Image 1 (cartoon, rainbow, N blue to C red):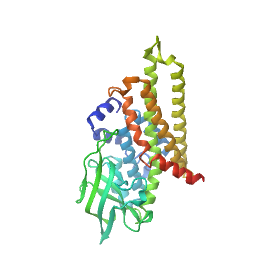
Image 2 (cartoon, rainbow, N blue to C red; image 1 turned 120 degrees about the vertical axis):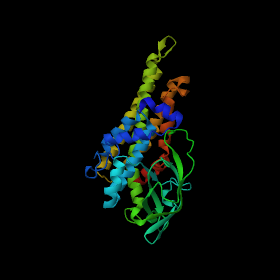
Image 3 (cartoon, helix red, strand yellow; image 1 turned 180 degrees about the vertical axis):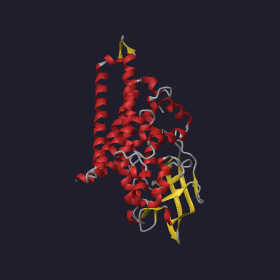
Length: 354
């Protein structure tokens, strides 16, 4: 991915063929159990994979994490039929998946979603909209959180919708600061009818599925920040070794030496927190949700700071699109917002500690 990262960003090109080829390496179902055809990795091992991939392209890796999350949700909470039919298609990446939770009027307050699914006979009739959906309009399957019952989290269910379902439509592709080489659109439902059998898990259990997915999602997205920060650090290190000022290379400047030491510490501390949260999730520890929130807060804040500091070390060159460091700055910035904003992470951590 690395040789094409900047070209994909410039052209806003979604590299579907490249993404699908990763299925041959097992990247379509990294942490899905082997009994369903998945790779069967732990969350810890998956974090290592996503960090490594992100050194080549944060945006493309981020989409692969979303696809994996949807596949995992279905393999964990779906019916036997869904596990036998849908999951293998996602693992093979014959079909790509998007996740639909956020709405125009509900982001951090996910339990306030209003997209409705009214049961009529053996069908649900969906009406509403989802916002900021990665891959929307291009992907084949949409896992959507809808309201089937009372207000609040207990009235939310999860359903699967195919791209070609009548009543499903997409807004224009959003123009974004980063993540340019994956489409992001509004998803609209207008009297969109799907079979009740498309539901994932029991009715009213959707919010539980969403939260379980987000714990892992926070580790995944933090891992992409780690990859971006690691690569930015290496780019800055190499630049300081060749760029000269006042008769000596920049890496002989004590301030920049100290700054690089701080950046290295930020990366390693973030990596340790992410890995520890992954271990907790693997072992299903009660502390896992709080640790995932801590890891996401610490890693995405610090890794963005590392990328931004690396850009500063390039001086004016860092501000040019010809240099990849600026793309890492743009692409990791959104990780402080999605999968629960870092302000919400602070709330989750406070609830756990107070």
